[in-house]
Every structure is written in structure tokens, then in C-alpha cells.
Length: 120
Image 1 (tube, helix red, strand yellow):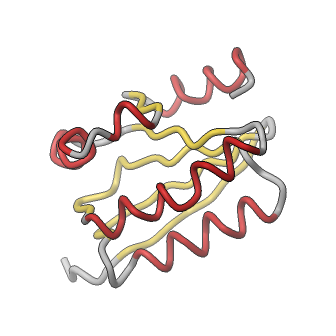
Image 2 (image 1 turned 60 degrees about the vertical axis):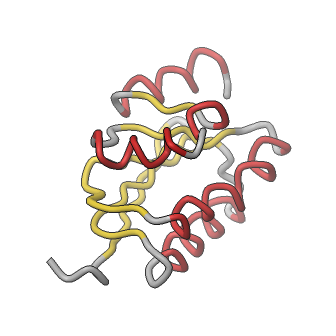
Image 3 (image 1 turned 90 degrees about the vertical axis):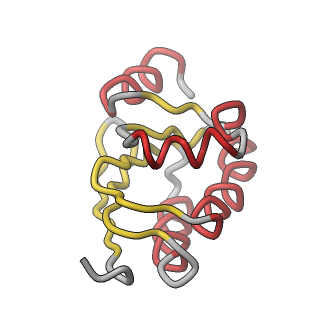
């Protein structure tokens, strides 16, 4: 697989936007995710789930994208929840203490249900 390969797919339901990311998220591809999250937030969606099921690799630049948006989203009464991480990707988040900052769920449905039951 080409390491520059990265893609996103977005869908919305019940006021919750899910962004599925795939491939390699690094310094070269991080701007793609930045743009996707920025347009999502600008459209008024502040309840976001990022599904990592198809993500093969994440670098510190990729992690930085989430840090750039989380405060604004939470200040707007929403959250960015994460789901379906492989052990390899989760270990990068865990190493940097991200599980303390972000709601990371095993399955997208768990993150979705948390939004529905708690509101954020």
C-alpha cells in the first residue's frame, strides 16, 4: 500500500457525524483530515465519531489534528469520540495519554449510543 494513501468517508444520522478514516495518517495526509473535520464543524455538527477501523498507521501529526479541534468542539457542547482502533493504532494513542483526553470506544455503536444517551 502506498503510504501516502489516506481517505475519509462521512455520514450523518441523529445529529451525529461519523468520519471513517482509512490508510496512513501522517504529516502528508493530516491536512485531508483537518479539512474534513473543519467542514464538519463549520456545518454545525459538534457530535463527531471518528471510526479508525480502516486506519493502518497514525503519526504524531495525525494525533495533532484531533488536539486542534477537541477544545472548540467541547466548548460548543459536543465531543469527538473515537472507535474501532486496531491495537497498533490504540497503542500510539495510549503512549501519549490520549485515552485520558478522548472517549475511545471499542465499537462505533458504543460511541453512537453514548451521544444518544448522554448528549455528548
